[in-house]
Amino acid sequence: MTSPTANVQNTPELSQEFQEMWVRRGEPFKRKNPFTPTLPVIIEGEVVYDLERMNLEYPGELYVTPVVHRSTLALATFVDAKEMLRKAQEVTGDDELRQLLRASALGCVADGDPVRLVLDCYDRQNLEGSKLRLDPEAMCPELYKLKRGNNFPPLNWDNAIRSVDACAYPYSVSSDPWFHGTTHFINFRCSFNATTFGYTASSIRNWGTLPPEF
Figure (cartoon, helix red, strand yellow):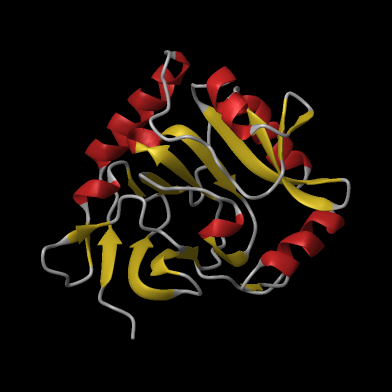
C-alpha cells in the first residue's frame, strides 16, 4: 500500500536561488559520493573498466545521460554539463536506444500518447512505497530536509528514491545536495527502477517547460 504523497512546491525565491547557484557551477567541487553504476560507463569517449580509479581521477562534478554503446545500454559521462546535454539531445531520436530503454523499463509511454506532467518518485522498487511528487518546474535541492512516509523516528528522502514513474518532461537527479556531485539527466517517457542507472538522489528537479541551461 502506498503511503501519503509528499509534494514539492516551487517558489520564486527557490527559483532565484537555483538560478544563482547554476551560474556558479564552474567553481571547483568534490563529490561526496562515488559513482558506481552497474551499466557500462563511457567517459572521454572511452569505456571505463576500473570505476574506483575513475572516481579518483574524476573527483568533481559528473554529468550523465544514457546512450547506446556496442548495442548495449550505457552511461555517457562528462565533466562538462554542456557536452552531456548536447549528447542527450543528439540521441533523443535513436531507435536502438529506445528499444534498450524499453527492455530495462517498468513501462514506457508511446510517442504521441499523453503522459502525466508530474514526476512521481517512490522509496521502493516497482513504483511502490512512499511517494514524492514534483510538479513541472518544481525542485528539491535538499532531500534530507523532506519527510518520507509516516515513520517514527521520521525518515527523509535523501538517497531514498528507488523507482521513478514516467513523466512528460525531462528531469535530473544529483548525488549531492543543491544539484552537485553526479547529475543524471533523464529525457525519456519510461518508468524505471533507479538501480538501472545506478543513481543516488540528494537533490532532484522536474524541468517542466524550462529546458536546462547548462
